[in-house]
Length: 397
Image (cartoon, rainbow, N blue to C red; front, side, top):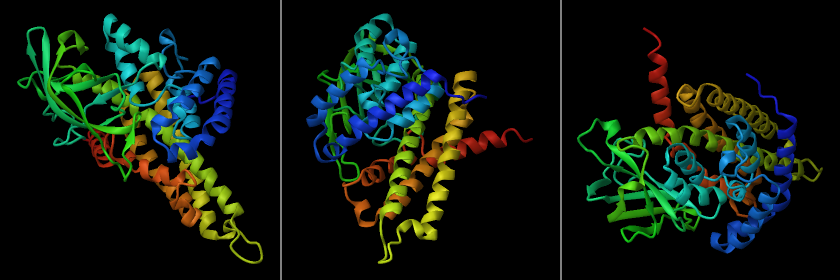
């Protein structure tokens, strides 16, 4: 196990951190105050700059125009990008496109790669992923009401999805649907590519999350599929392999999230310490940093971030060396451990900022609102803990 950063990666990280500091963090006020679509012209300019710097798509395979970084290397990049909300988007490695790109690259036909993968990898289009359903438990993907029934050379899809992130403005959606209800539970569903301009694909609304509806990439859509007809050639992978493909997608996806959360931890910790050092609380010039409880928050945060970072890098290294399936336990551990570390660090930083922390004058309130969901999506804490415990107990007879 070696977490040594190569000289090349040190240069890459230095370039990325400098870009985030100079080009993206100054955009945060507008990001918080404006509709996302209003920012697209300036964000596209930043994307063009990233491409000129040859830093586009750090986790994309080289053959589709990316940097081809390992999971471990991308972890370091993702932490740097996670310090600001637009980081991953500007560098072309944002969810859900990153996950869709992975499964298209692994399982797509040549025609699918040409039509969907290549423009997605270039950043010419966006995509979304339709798995979570309104009336079904999100933590049990084998329970699904959406169906895809064969009719001639087509599938007719009917179903109701929500929390389809970035559906607003997407070119296509990879939809999970039951294609064979008589098959064993893990072989019932398939993944099908559905163009969003299909008459049967309906964006009902962007769901207000913590009071914010959002738009375009920065939104979560509710989708109604009504007699949505798509050709059977849009099947991604083999029929009945939807659950397997979902695991291929969600395993590395959870790593990507944890890496991004570490960036949020780092930014929140910086804000915590800066505020503690500068905020005068008495006539004699003492600052918040003189208070033992604040010192305790700083020490606890530093230790917890370091632990979360090492756990995540270890899980990334395991995926690189033995594969996602063998690293399953490591991924489950970091999914809930890093999410909870992030929650605590954000909360402490917000507390140190007092009333200021509740406003959008800093990025902390945004982090607090939008990252509470980290303990729910891609497997709730309780699900990961329960499944991990069962696998651990199975080793003892």
